[in-house]
Length: 213
Image 1 (cartoon, one colour):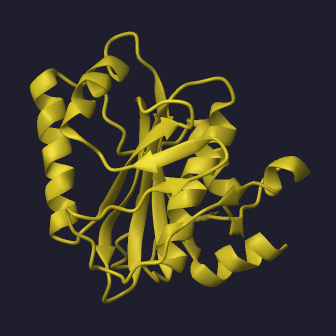
Image 2 (spheres, rainbow, N blue to C red):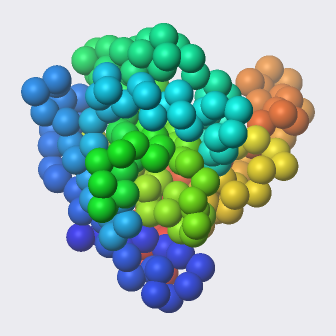
């Protein structure tokens, strides 16, 4: 059982359940299901496409990291799910559909993308339907994926990207203990300019220290 940091004492006692698994060896016959006190994270399924279309119609509203889609037609949603299932089969990523504990209906997404086992790193991505208490819910969901990355897949470094001006996802990433990189003008740096995106990072040691503080 792993507890995550939060801004209030009660929330900091929430726990995340993860199951042990050898890194890079998942397949279509096994997909980790994660549970938090507020959510269940399961495998994406083809029948989730209707909910994706619903969530991203002209009335829908989501909060999350920079990769959140803006619109889904039915065929777009089908291809989006198929592409993520293919990434999992190739070992490049792990993707979860986020559901409330009380029902199986998709309300969001969280994933570990661009998994690089050689350098033991990946990108944390998430987006969820705006619900009452969304920030705490996002924190629970993101923490579950982060815990799995560090304790089960044995990664050492995680990054995430957020959009400037969107305070909700940034607050979640900060509560996880992630640190925002500052722009650098160092010659030849790949991070010379990122005015249109905020880059966040955390190492396994920093995450463990945050949990213990």
